[in-house]
Length: 198
Image (cartoon, rainbow, N blue to C red; front, side, top):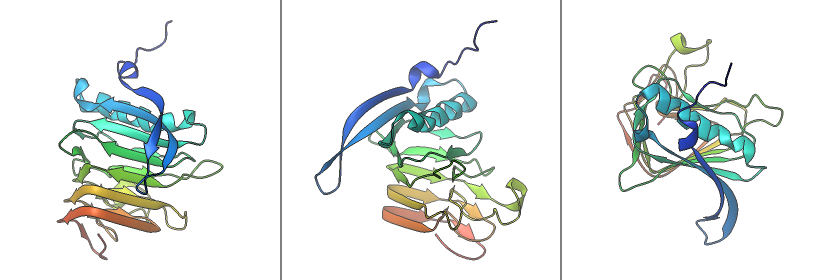
């Protein structure tokens, strides 16, 4: 039998490139990109976007930048479980919209590897309609409607030039829950959590 065809594989590009830091310095990076509009279904687009995030495994310790074009209602949360920092960046004149469809979170940081997951940055995106409640995981897994990183993992989640809208958490962090959250030029709109938090 032949290998299963992966229609998204050719649409996820991986390259090494310089990255301009806010202070004007340069840091070598590993970049991947995905055009969400190139897929026939939300499931295919979700799989391709997860593959682009997982390309961090190929980055040999370099900062991994995932450039995203287009919008999608994810069929499952994206998972960042890599030991290199990941930047998920929308490209184009409009922010890329990533939605949980009120069914699940948008992104989970899962430090299961031997060196744990590294920090996460989200840029020029709109994260909306994420949901975290006890039906989605074990007890205590109810913080961070859009983005969740486990307490005590030391993960920093940075969100910049973004919109966090209509995300819901049963307990804390209607939009984002992590040990440290940095918001830069972010509109926080109608996110709810019973115990408060953005």
